[in-house]
Length: 300
Image 1: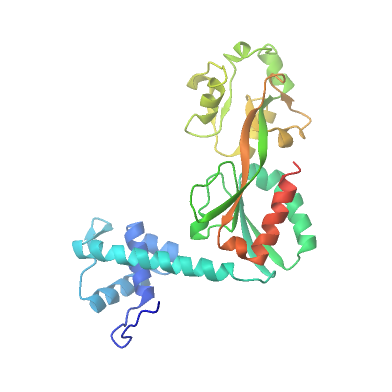
Image 2: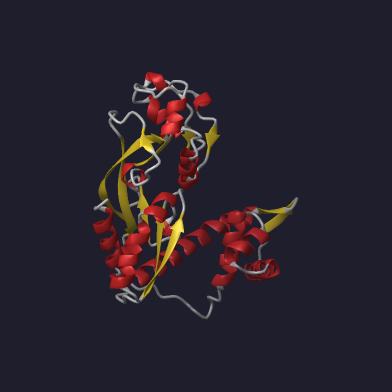
């Protein structure tokens, strides 16, 4: 159904609206400028022009930041819907592309980006040399809906209906350390023997401690004197005999200087998912890369 509009009366400038939207989201002109890759004065001029165009004041200055006026807060709801529609249009149009040639961004954790993806990307480059690849290395979940990446390798299934996810497999993860470190703490044979061992935490939320305690360990924060959210850094610390770390067994067991801690203990399992936007997965280029990743990741 087509909606008839009087375009002679519609003189709305989306660039000005976008400047208003991002400034409201970021809280300052300078922050909005960084997001939009524009100079702060340009953002300010666009917002001033929008205020004149609409006949309302959108912001008032509070300290070094900006605060929405009541009118600004009301109009922001409409501009947010415009932004969502513009993003949806961009994704839908991109997803229709059937060209193999072009760029693609793959999001993966630092461990997978460094230890798993290089061999897969090498194979992709031989098969599809016209595809340019960017690896977004992050241990946080990249936002596919905002096009931060085209495809993501994740350890959880997304809940957003706009995303398509394929479970590749369940990955075993074990505790690892150097033989030197294990010898220094008495070569532990049981979970109880590790009550005074030192582990390397992998985030600020004590997820490793909670996961180990759930399977019979009795660890406290004192067992985790060092924390890093970078798994590659954690792994280097393990290799320096600083403590015990956890890693995907398929990656860890390629390192000859590291041994498994309590090798008879069942591994901790976590799922491996491949995720793409529903519209992007209709693109020939995205589909080719998605299918290759699914095939190769399933071999590990």
